[in-house]
Image (cartoon, rainbow, N blue to C red; front, side, top):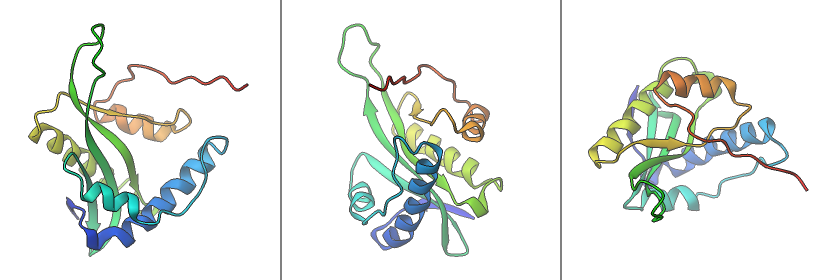
Length: 153
């Protein structure tokens, strides 16, 4: 297994993983997420970006997972301590490859990516119903610092 940066040649395989990712989110929280098809424009924009990357987990030439990570900054408010940080936007390992170390390798690579850019920390959003994912992130050193709450009207 290797972890490498995505290239434009990887877009078709990345789109297949996005399909699985979107379906998983839609199943987990159908009120807020739709299963849909990724056209390829979004991963193309990330690959061409200067402040974001898609890191791929590849086994025998097949992409089995990815993590989309980008640089971000705290808002410029006097009450908020200023930081430059990395933000995990999307992260998936195919169902058939979970529990085999691919996610850990991707997250470790994302941490290296952030360190190489002298960023202060990594932040991510995780669905509250995703208990296994929460345990994984806690195991990788993440801690809850806030909650997003919604009130349906």
